[in-house]
Amino acid sequence: MKAPVLAALYAAENGFRYGATAPVSPSGARGPGQFMPATWAAYGKDADGDGKADILDVADSVMASGHLLCDMYNQIEEWKSQGEVVGDTLDLTIAGYNAGVGAVRSHHGMPSGEADYENQTKPYVAKIRASESRYASLLGVFGGGADGIGGKIVEAAIRYLGLPYVWGGGNVHGPSAGGFDCSGLTSYAVYAATSGISLPRTSETQWNVGTEVPLADAMPGDLLFGNWGPAGPGHVAIYIGNGQMVHAPTTGDVVRVAPVFEGMKARRVV
Image 1 (cartoon, helix red, strand yellow):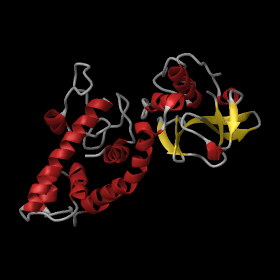
Image 2: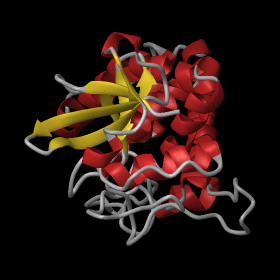
Image 3: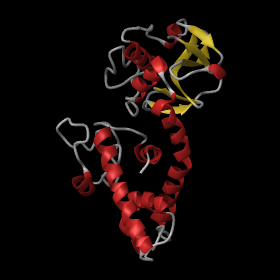
Image 4: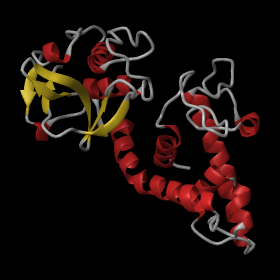
């Protein structure tokens, strides 16, 4: 089960949100992997060595999802070899994560016909498969395409994917008041990656640091500035490559990866 599939699935499940404030589904599914209690009891393990299997934790949930998906994939392959189900094994596995692997078997393939399957399961599978290539591109950057200080800046920021946006939140030492705002995230990431470079605290003042570079020449770790006003940029993000950035967007949102906004300018600060 490859990382881009898991990333696309977690984006679809809960928008990478985790921790105590992560939404709970109407059916009671919890955490970034949206596990029901019985499934978590079977698959939840302490993956990060902190002494507990935490359904709200990213590391524990990702490993549990991976094991669940692999088990379903192998089961569906066995059913296919016996002539019980037909269809693409990965598509059916993703459908099983949404509707239960039993639904795949009882429908001899992709669950269909009922409203939940037509309106939820099938679009869910299509959404994940359609975004898989995007996450493969992004993870290619994280996996080694971003070297040096720029890569470390990116790595520091993506550690906090899913953390809530908090106006005024964050500083060089990490999140505060439960989250980051846009310039709090960039301040932290640059400081953590460089072991000591402190940026000014706002997007407007961060624009005055370093050297502007053409957006087409931006490298992972460069800062991107947008939402321009009379005082300068009202937003700052971190370029990660392939036309994508990581940023803390706005109130009600979370730290996330997104396409670079139109009209943004790039600046190399280290």
